[in-house]
Amino acid sequence: MNDPTLHAPEETWWKDAIFYQIYPRSFADSNGDGVGDLGGIREKLGYLELLGVDALWLSPVMRSPMADHGYDVSDPRDIDPLFGDLAVMDALIEEAHVRDIKVTMDLVPNHTSDQHPWFIAALESTPGSPERARYIFRDGKGDGSEPPNNWPSIFGGSAWTRVTDSDGRPEQWYLHIFAPEQPDLNWTNPEVAEDLAKTLRFWLDRGVDGFRIDVAHGMAKPAELHDMNLELNTLMKNDDDDPRFNNEGVHEIHRGIRKVMDEYPNRVTIGEIWVQDNERFGDYLRPDELHLGFNFRLAEADFDAATIRDAVTNSLAAVARVDGTPTWTLSNHDIEREVTRYGGGIRGTGRARAMLLLELALPGTVFVYNGSELGLPNAVLPEDVLQDPVWERSGHAERGRDGCRVPLPWESPAPPFGFSTSSDTWLPIPPDWAPLTVEEQLEDVDSMLNFYRTAFELRELRPEFSGSGVDWYGSPPGCLAFRRQGGLICALNATDAAIPLPPGELLMSSAPLVDGQLPADAAAWLV
Ligand code: GLC
Image 1 (cartoon, rainbow, N blue to C red):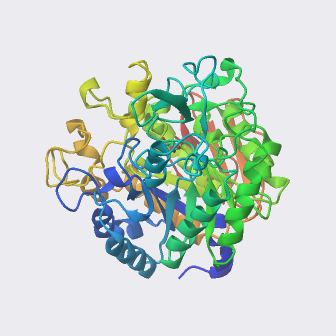
Image 2 (tube, rainbow, N blue to C red):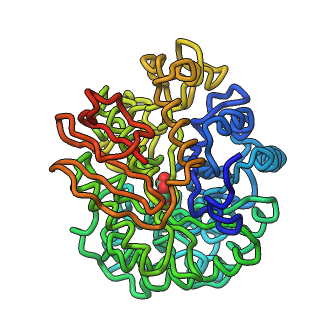
């Protein structure tokens, strides 16, 4: 067994954990409806244990009309029938715990679904009513026919939708930073915080180990909803000075969440915080706010040594001021898969392997998106199957995120590759993924899957993976190398030619050495 003193104590197990993000629609389908579900995850717990992950993050499984595939929640304290029910969720938590795997859930506090009973009541009520006060309703500009301000939705189009009164006459507008089916909550209303506390306790009492908090830099809106500088708006991204996000009031909301979390031992919150400025990023991780925050710098970095080094240095600096834990991620359900980002094909796959070694060599918490361990590329999908609301709302200018959300290939030589018994899967699986199935890859010692397993195992067992910082080594141009205090050395070659390795004993490399040298697009661990 591994030496427990090498790892974070149980109270702060998340400080060096490997989280595995499951996009439940696409992981495994147990009931043959073509959509993944909780039963499917239960059936694959053995696989997750074999892979060697410490914790799961489930993208939303609460009740939802699925306008944004679960990120539009109509009942935050129930499981959507598409995914199962509370009994299956309870069983999943229990069985995961038996295998020593924690379970964290996505929480969506910035908005609800437009089918949430609160929003239905708000529409049936009049301006100024307590029902409307749970959301952000405003009168329109001028004669009321213009939206209250110029804010765009992150998914395209206006962030405001006009409602009609009981006689069908146009009336107030409501704010939705995302799709119109995702009305923003009014966090200055204490009822909203009280309801979230109820939701937190509901799941924590069932044994959930924590939450990934969606749009954790949202929630608070400026009191005056002034127009914004539209140059700050880019589809699916936001600038630090964008008034729709990062308002000071958000920190009080996190303090409230943390108070509830602290009633329960050993739990964790991970915020989705799109913040560039290191000081502002660190603010979210003060001791009475979030435990962890996603840092997306590595996922945004090209495969270029200077850019990668800069991303690492910045991510470490962002948490250092508040003594926080760094986090690393190469992809998730919102971004293009890394194999494709790094150039696709053999090259993209090789670079993705190299980046995994880099990420696992760093101090802190690692988040792996389901399918990365199979080396899946982004799928190129025909337009008529696209489902992401971004596709429609951008007027078909942006294809959206479906390409990284295609179901996982498990076994057999043809779609649906054991993902489902139905061939009509919610997104089609490319037939050329046959060599990428779990079944195929388990057989092949050099596969991406076995590479992940070995790397996870070494990170778990070897004492050299310790120490809270990194010391950079001098390295040839286009390369980087650093050392952990425990003695691990990680070298990465982003040039086109092989380079000599730093001195040390080779623990693992992402590609076979060539005459003792580290080839192009590869990384190595030495001790
Ligand atoms: C977050 C989620 C994304 C979702 C959005 C709205 O950015 O990661 O998938 O569409 O919030 O909830």
